[in-house]
Image 1 (cartoon, rainbow, N blue to C red):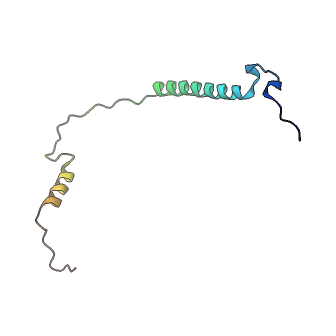
Image 2: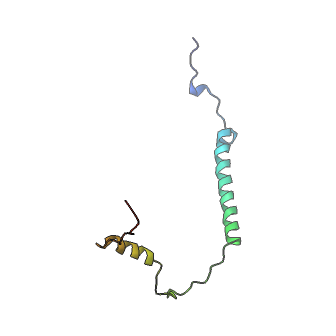
Image 3: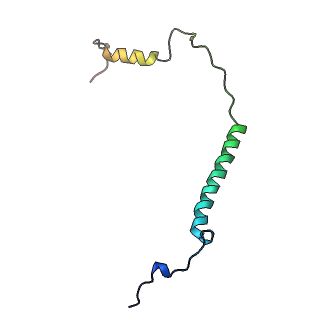
Length: 88
């Protein structure tokens, strides 16, 4: 059975010759460049802000009217009248 190699026996390699290091640094570099490209595209083609309409509605009903009517209907003790022809 061959004896395992010692770590000290491996030749010393400079950090710039290690391929995995370039994979990590290159991947992070691509992400940074892509984020700046996305930022410039977002700033160059930003959506225009629409003017805000007044908060006073034209009708007496507010946007929450249907929800309030449903809440009040479910909380009321009155039951709606049944149709004469409807059967259970």
